[in-house]
Image (cartoon, rainbow, N blue to C red; front, side):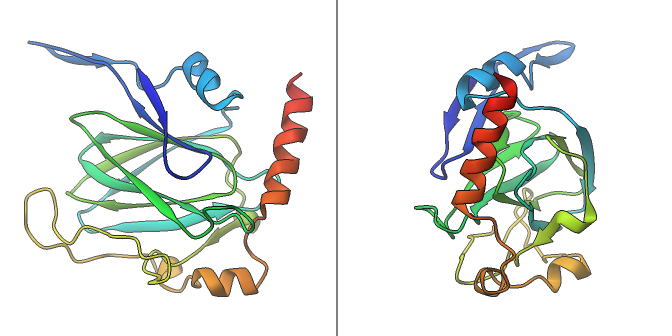
Length: 208
C-alpha cells in the first residue's frame, strides 16, 4: 500500500497492492496503522456508508461544520468515479482549489480527506458503488453543500463516461440549489483554518 499527499493539504491518495489470480483478486483497501503513520493521527470510525450511482450522477460538494467536521476514507468497490477534494477552509493557502483521484474497480485506489475539506464525485458508469468510512456520524444540522459546478472553483468534470459516450450530469435537488463558494463564504458557512487547527490540536490532546 502506497499513501501519498495530494496537492490539497490534508488529503491523501491510497494505492493498494492488488493480488490477482484465476479466482479473482485480493487486496487490503484500508490499513489503520498505515493511514495513521501517513496522516499523523488515527481515523476514528463512527459510520460506514455505501452509495450506488447511475452514470452521470454528480454528488457534492459536501462538507461538515468544524468542530468536529467529518474525515472520510473513500473507495469505489464497483464501477468508476472521479473523486474530488476541494479546499473549503477559509484562510488556507489553497482555499478554493481542488484535486482529484480516479477511483475504480481496476486499480482500487482510495482517498482520505481531513476535516474541513469538501468532497464530491462523478459516476462514470452505471452502478458505481462508493464506500465511505467516516469519523463522525451523519448530522443533518452540520452538513452543507457548495455547488460542484461553480465556475470559480472550476472542477474539470469529465464529459464522457467510461464507455466513451457523453455524460449528462444528474444532481440531487439539494446539490442543484447549493450556493457557490463565494456565497457560502459570505454566509459564514465555511470552516476556517483557525477552527480546523484548533480541532486538530484538541484531537491530539485527547489522543495523547
